[in-house]
Image 1 (tube, rainbow, N blue to C red):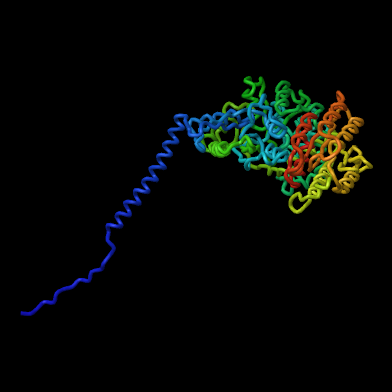
Image 2: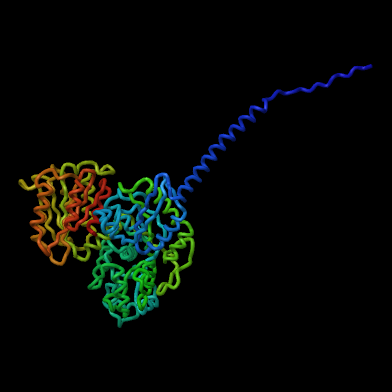
Length: 592
């Protein structure tokens, strides 16, 4: 018998499977524990929110909103609140206050009156970034984050029906035609209606009426390279641009209403063309819609006004959401403000804004009825000026009508040699800003004083250029600015009394007589603050109001007494951390 060879199989030894299984089970248990904990935490927080018993209690997010958008924002806030939002273990409740942007700006920068306005807001929704720019120019530390647009509204010209039809029937009326048509005798003749006489456009103060400010930008945009803007600070020093601005200011009606809303009311009350002393007023589309439908007054006008969109790049309001910063804004409000802003940008809330007469990207639906509004498609938008230039335009406008008499008192103490940012000392920034204002001014009166210690014998102050018309002494002013040199101490209060006395002696009735102080340090000699207040009270004369405004540069000025001084005289206090903010802040003061 033959023998068979046994078959042998080679066996590989591996890792035992039971340890792997145990590790897998443990990992699943650990992951399950964390998942259960996370889900449990979410459920617990939701349950706490639903029960109104958040671990850290309730936190209130206060939002101040311009009346144009307040109703829609309040509806969105109620919708968000129904979702029981929880931030840092706080139940969040949103309170939306309808309040004019001018009031918010003044309150935030000059002192918030809680008795009238309630507590200060944590966020601000205004109609234009122009307001955020003004806030930043006066005190940048109050801006909590970059503003974000939540909606838009173009600027229109509002006219009675006959005027609107004539303007639309003409051949291509553009924003850049405003200076020529409004300054010409019998301007309506150019639009086919010679019997109507002059074409006057009411331009309420651009420092407090954003629609006016944006219309002015559009009128000046023709001087930019492609005619679409942006207007720049350098452009404002060009003679042709200054001439255009002068023509606009010179063609204002004899009586210009102080606000856009006042102008709309006058136009609606006297529907015949020029019946109110002017033919038209710039207005945001949403505000014209609200006027014509009686959203603010509760009663629509008998005759709606009609909105006309002139040709060329259209100025558009961007309705920014502005987070605020300050010692009254806690961490919960900061985060809640961010989340509420994002909620406003969701489709449903955007449609709510559209229903209030604003433009948004998610829908082309418009509110109905909307008398006087065509909702024309915006095809060409104006590129807006930067933050600095917007202040310069308002300042140039404020001085262009020859209605201001301003004397600038400049600190020439030793501390002005200290670094002011970008490798330049503070004094260089101040001189650059002052020279720019002199070069951009088209009219008005301006004077220049300096203060330190023992500048004129024992006097700590010296007049460099007497206050007078800018056009007659532009070079003297520029030479005076160029000669400013840091010297010794800061005897501010003694110098202020001397300048106040001089301003009273040369007071010009019917104009705004003002003192603007640029300083970077605390008063360190001469009169005390109490003595200053006593002297100003003694010198004050009925019918001769002199506003004192202060631009405080750097961390050292005594802000509390300076704020009290400016409030008591009807002026404003602006604070800039370094020299790079001086130009815009000075322009803001001049336009205030």
